[in-house]
Length: 319
Image 1 (cartoon, rainbow, N blue to C red):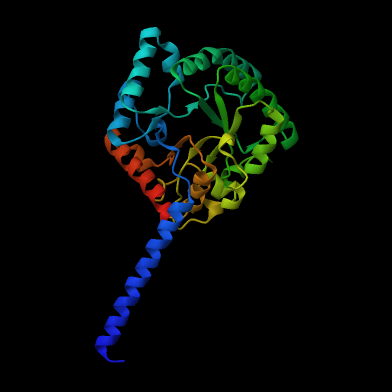
Image 2 (cartoon, one colour):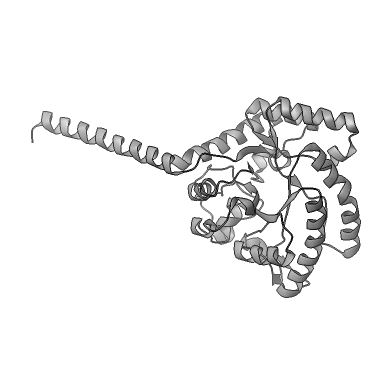
């Protein structure tokens, strides 16, 4: 084969390969449902601090589509203050994400009952503001209670929480913690994967109580996209999207040292996100990297890096 035909052949082969790759992306785009979830700003997770109305404007300026509601702030507002918060949210074209649960249910009974008594006004304020989602996380172990005893306690306490939230139109999400190095610190392991969380949800047995999925915990729990195949949109209250540091074995990964979505490629984010698209998930997707360099940034650069990472991760679904 002389040089010219060979050059022409290689050029044609390159064009054909590029065309096939384009067709693959177009085919994938055609088979996946359109994105319904929002790119969410959860400020504390990325070291951002701002007055709640200023936070809404910050989110809009950087292209976020939803914002974590501050239940305590909303509960302090009179009718005019609450109206301003709602008007600002709507004027900026934003939605509420998922609030954090202000109930410490993991400690002693007195602390739990005190916080539970304070929950109804916060739940009512979130409802008046139009928020519909709230969540918390589950400790993956205990030094005091074996699994069955701990499951009974969690189900009892979280059932009481769930009923108050359901009475105010709030879906309640539970996040399992899959990190092996964290679980190893406890004498008695507890709920730390999807199937165990479903067991806890069945024991709670309150409609509207569901899952918070986190790509970090999904990956550290050893789960795959196939494990998400049976999960429905109605099951999922909120989603955290994170990556992991490179060069560290999974068993040695530390829960509070993560990376922004798609930063390293250690966590197979594409399969995770495809599962969300397939189920038609329509809630907030937020970054929770517990990343020290990010937390040291001012608000604007921290938001800019976070929204860029979220967009990059979503775009990678079609790569």
